[in-house]
Amino acid sequence: MILEYKISTKDRVYLTPLVQSSLNHTAVPSLGNKAPTELFTGLPCPSPLVDQCVTNVSSSASSTKKERGENVVDFDVGDYVLRSRVDKKKGNKLLVTWQGPYKVVRADAHSFRVSHLITGYEVDVHASRLKFYQDSSLNVTEELLEHVASQGIVLAIEELKRHRWNSATKDYEVLVSWKGLESVEDSWEPLTSLAKEVKILLDHYIQKQDAKVRKYWKHLNAKFQ
Image (cartoon, rainbow, N blue to C red; front, side):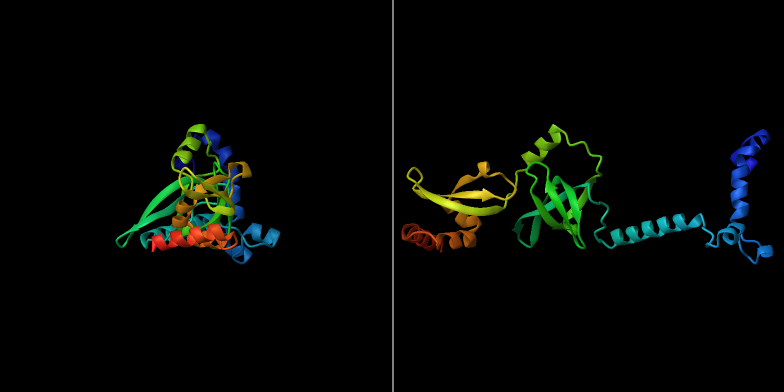
């Protein structure tokens, strides 16, 4: 060991703990093929190779999955990830955009809940739609937040509250409450635009309203058909 570690014979005292550990954890015939530590504690003798083997097996399994094209989850709660979003379909191909980063706030069996850095809006996303960005030590700077904001925020509708007629555009406007945003951030959206994005939700809302807006909605639907 002195030759292997290239130390002076005068410093051999520093190797004593290693030698003692090796002797105490080595099975010998005189003890019935047991190690002194095993007989002293009554517990199985730990092997320094166990951790190495577990690491090697885990690494090998991950490599095999990657070679097969399987998604390998390498992030956990507190880490930051990118989320894929399908923007549209062109021919037989889906056009996917990676957005984020988002912060992972919960891990479930087959999905993760991620939080938008600006709005705080949380959504459950399948692991295959996420990829690791950086661990929990990420410094969320103003520049990073500006980058996230520049991607455009995809919001989900919480509620359609009420409507009004806009004489300038000659169209109804609907007051929309957005998930993850405060009520002060509710916005008036053109009914015609909402009809293209959330037609079913809008129809449920309009059927509960007065005859005038229902008639307008019926006329608008006829134009789209």
